[in-house]
Image (cartoon, rainbow, N blue to C red; front, side, top):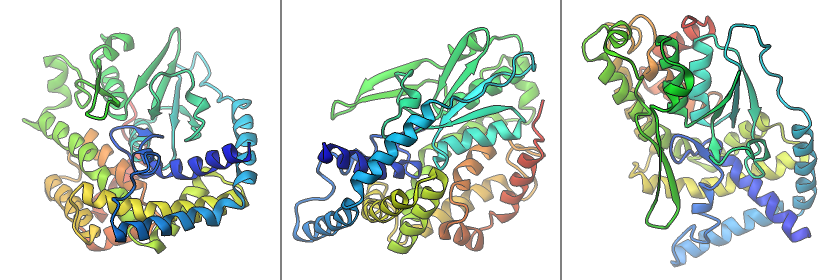
Length: 372
């Protein structure tokens, strides 16, 4: 029994890192297991064995408080289940939205940026990254998940699909939500390892007829530009976050300070999560650097990506969308925002030209200037 509880404890600590390490357009509990749960974190070389021993020592440091922490997890989970979110009152004239998320997941941050900019009311359910009982109703096991509670309950998966569906609904009142969701069909396949992969067609498209598209995209090629950079945010920018926030042991510890604060860990639980999780993610970040062919100094990849974005926005407009942000602006902002308060964020603001655009995004979102 104690062994099972300790495994649960280790799992929760390691799964917390997914709030910074998304494998696709949703945050999944299984991403870390590709490096640890499989037993293939590093190759069987002499130097790799030394790293494995160091990582094992980091796990053992937290083992003494593992059982206590696991009990705390169970109690916290029970409280979460007995305190369901309160829906937006019916008759308010708004969609009743419930967002299931991890607070520091870049994909979840993208969705919140979109909802906040458009002044949409929504409730948040913070999902336990191991037990995930908050989303036991769903076959889709990643976050974010958006549930729309009205005359019929609708579920939308995948951050980019959520945003595209809601934007389509805002612009095209001729279509109902169920019809719009059908424009983004789910496709299931298996990769070379036999793991099931879920993807969505058209997820970066706002599905409009010709007249509606001309109203939303009056500038030639602005629709193509928006789609291109939304894809870039999902396919490249998010993969720069983990290697940067866990770049050094000191930064890994600082990042887990942030995760513990946002996750509302108890004192003992937080200590365990911080030191074991930080040690694990410091080593995993090196693997991610190699996987994505990043430079030895991963900050340079971050700087280059951000300056590439700023150059694409250009000097003649405050946002890629012109006088107001488009969906690409909101996506890039949502991804970068999860680094706030960390050294990587401060370095990015100092060594790139993103500061003006970023602060303008903060202002328009705070003022909900996209409210319809």
